[in-house]
Length: 164
Image 1 (cartoon, one colour):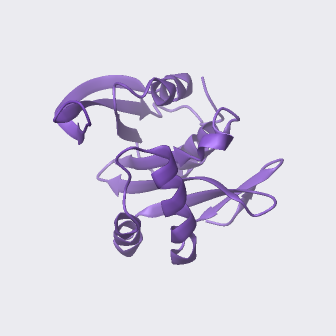
Image 2: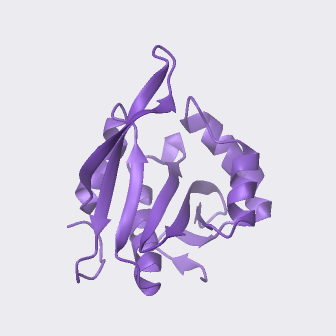
Image 3: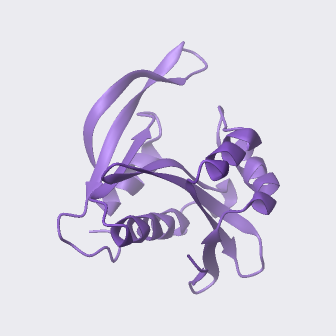
């Protein structure tokens, strides 16, 4: 997977040298962030990591993907808070879908907090549908745990060129 150039940003494979920056954004974006070790383990286990950088080299987002049987599981997708709302998340979803399609997989699967309305809107805009709920999946501050919505995007013979 080589770097994919966009107008003012590009995607490239996540490497060990990206992880300090990734961890900084992760902590800024989430109340219960992944640790640097979680990202290290993901790369070591052969999962796909993508980094999106501005042409200046600044990291603005990343995602981690794990192929499972016939689907690509989107484990983590994050855009740095100052860069949110400018299309970076949608661009990373397009690349995740393209990567899954090139491997002959049938779709993308993910979990998302029901309280993460912005992410849910992004996934629905892309074409994901809610297919289930995992009880007590995420840690939460005011409640012991928060459920996860399980969402799926199926290729169903269509090319991925962006949101539906």
